Image (tube, rainbow, N blue to C red):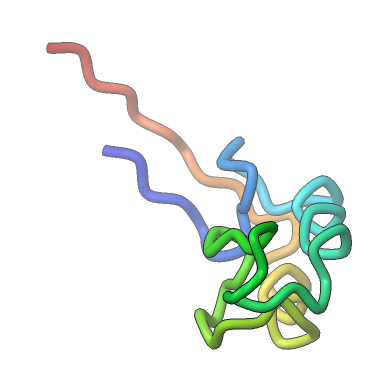
Length: 71
């Protein structure tokens, strides 16, 4: 099961600068814009903005152990 920390938008298992970069690239993009990506709208309010950056700051440097399952 893959269970990521809130703020790990690139899904690499750690909340870090790269996640912050993605949020900044798409900053102010709203849900009606073709560039909108729900993965970057961490509070799911329809706009990528400062509140989403807050999640990055809260969980910055938080790591998640990822277990991969094989069928």
